[in-house]
Length: 356
Ligand code: NAI
Ligand code: MG
Image (cartoon, rainbow, N blue to C red; front, side):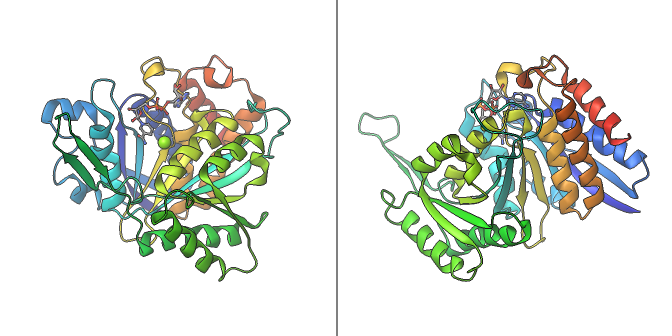
């Protein structure tokens, strides 16, 4: 029997609603005698914690979190607190402190799900974006000069290190080899305009690509890549991008495969020195918070990615197959997919499907 220590951070908005369903699915797996159990620590961090304490999490919070095998995260964001405070107060520090430099975000068009695009069939869209996750455009480097004065200057610095850049690009190539599909890696760049960081990115990409002669490569400017994610997403296999570009592209990847509510992600610490974190791609979703209609499948699939990471491949497969059946059958789905089921009804249905 393997016991895993899981840090649960439901966070804000729909985060707690969808994490409750992911937890329900993990509980069912545990109860079904799959040879694994989970010990949870609940971290009540986020915007309400901020309202009470002036911080999104305690100063020494990561010390305790570090002792876990994995982190399951909901979402962060609050209509009354500026986004840079919430994001830079919770999720970005976790990604950096635990050196989760590799963010993996699959987009797959499931059978039974309609893409807003015409002429794409189930399985046609099947890509994985590797997003650099600890630096790039989201490095907290910069400042204000003459703050609030008419001559104010804001400086925001992008940071591209050899370690971070090479790490994400290499991870994309390694994954492409294992994936056994088209064996193509697309690099997303903007070196025409960003003449240092992105020129460096291209150079590192070419260097790493030379070590993988069995893999086809291409390099697209980010604006062109956005267009092609909509025009012919079928042509992508593995895509590697900087922190900002990967963030933007994966919202497109989510919506062309049916819904934000279906897109999972993994933030991996490649050395295994710290816990990796699993979370839906979506955010706090203010427009549907508290209505009980958020799609929990992104969070449930993220829990599946967590199990896969922990080596529980069979259990991860059970989750994935249950989600596939649920989407194929189509009877129990939330409004974002055209249904009328609630968040918890979908969670219950996944549990039911795992046992049939
Ligand atoms: P969002 O991802 O929260 O919502 C975008 C759209 O997708 C909305 O129409 C929402 O209703 C829909 N959606 C999202 N999750 C859904 C689900 N599970 N089921 C059905 N529909 C779903 O992005 P938005 O509106 O830009 O950001 C809202 C807040 O979330 C902001 O404060 C932002 O900073 C934060 N955010 C946090 C993230 C995180 O915690 N990792 C990621 C993205 C945004
Ligand atoms: Mg995003």
